Length: 307
Image (cartoon, rainbow, N blue to C red; front, side, top):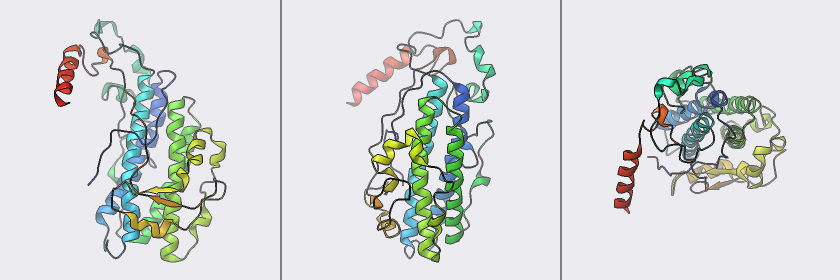
């Protein structure tokens, strides 16, 4: 089972301006070949299909716990996409009605790279890549063979790190860059973890391939606070009591060369996380509706009743 908490894994700064084309670029980290939908889909179905779970508990626990983290990565990228498409909050922007909708208040939206994100999702995220091509289940590999699946996962994380850096290099807004910086650090953790798991099974020191690709996180400003707090050394169980067995793979090892030194650790539970940004409504786009005042009043009464 999954437990949901109303926070993001990392706090995201507000965007400087509305930039739906930057949002489209960030969509690549969601629905692209190496995006978070792919890592989630691969690890989730591998964990569902895992054979001999009790006899291979450390390896099963590793894949299962990272599955939960990847679900949060999908949420993080989706929020970043929506924030960039929405732009800075406009105080009171969701009050009143949508005005004269015959005067094309959203005319500029027809020229954005991913028009479907506005027309179909109201400026939100979709499980598509930066060109609005749908993510699909063909990107999921679950062979049932532990070594093959772990090797595939190692490749997937290495490809994803390159993927994230290329998207990072196209963005200037702090929202998108923060998403990339956080995921570059956590993706490095996952690649390291799968490399160590393969080493335990095969004896091959695959961690000597790392960092692959050779991305110096020390040169990326948005990575620094996560490195300083030790995020590059931590695996989380994402559970109050389960998946601790992966410590046999992870603990006792050390951070990768080039990152701040220290021993690797498994942390029970999950990181502190950050607040989810509240997107201002756009009545002229019918988000949440053309004239939402009555809806707000109903919600307020229901909220007071629940307290």
